[in-house]
Image (cartoon, rainbow, N blue to C red; front, side):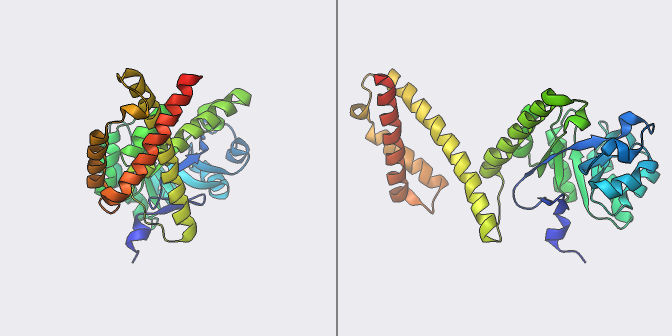
Length: 296
């Protein structure tokens, strides 16, 4: 009998999906464009993370060269192929057919489990329906990925909706090639990694079990904190330009005390006294920055 952690976590290419921080997975490759006219090993060339077969003939190559097999949205009704893919013993990423309900999507994962493979991850792609993504995770208890290859701008929203990971297709998966394709992939990966770091640190609870995991979690929180502090400093500079009396002489101590009280309600373990010293340092840093910019 599997444990709760095992039911909610699947390892793909060394990445733990469904436990701890959200992850970014690159290199989704589909063999469907080749339509069986090119040998799967030749088409893949080297090891890939996620691979979608065109037919059952591609499965031996996928078993040898992929970290996970993709049950693509276009062939989710091909139950024999779904079962054959699950029979490889690799983690299975089950995409949702655009018109499929949550029940159908989760049920398809059940076919994979029926083959003795419970390493199943759900994946929402195409035109992302983030509400469906959230509902599927809650209904199934399985990890859920969001494929943001078509619109990397949705990465942050997907993490906020509860995605356990983001899929970013490489040039082989999107049809791109050459330096331009690699540059585009690198930019998409950076956007996804920023979403995982910043949004994940704010909204995704973590329970690190080791010192290394704890330090990684702290790094993510610190990255989010630095981003927010930079934004706050910029807004403080705008306030200084709008106030009749700016700089240190224009500080509103009553407003600052009220600010600290509101923050203490969100962070009761820190309390007003500790937060007051922290916010005083933040406010003074912003004022110093505003004065430096005014003189330049």
